[in-house]
Length: 118
Image (tube, rainbow, N blue to C red; front, side, top):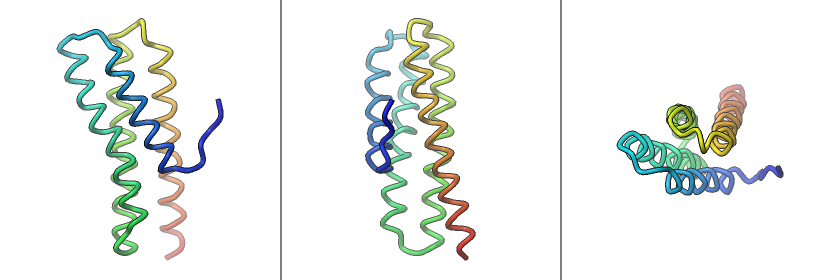
């Protein structure tokens, strides 16, 4: 799979793909509730990354990046729950979990690099 190196675009695609995934799930109480949480957290990854790019200062940059990383980690959590209850969607869920993990790793790397500059 080709990776996108524009992180704003990549986080957008992650949020979009999570929405398509949730839309395809069977309608059950747990899928609806966990899906809502996934939609919120996956969208927040990109929104906070965009805000980090429009930083008001170094502290704001670091804070927004950490929030984006936290939301990627949360998205991974909701995806793991949804994977357990939706055997028909395991492969798609694995792809999204892998992307959440990679986004979390990329954001960690950016945080570490910006922290080391100080």
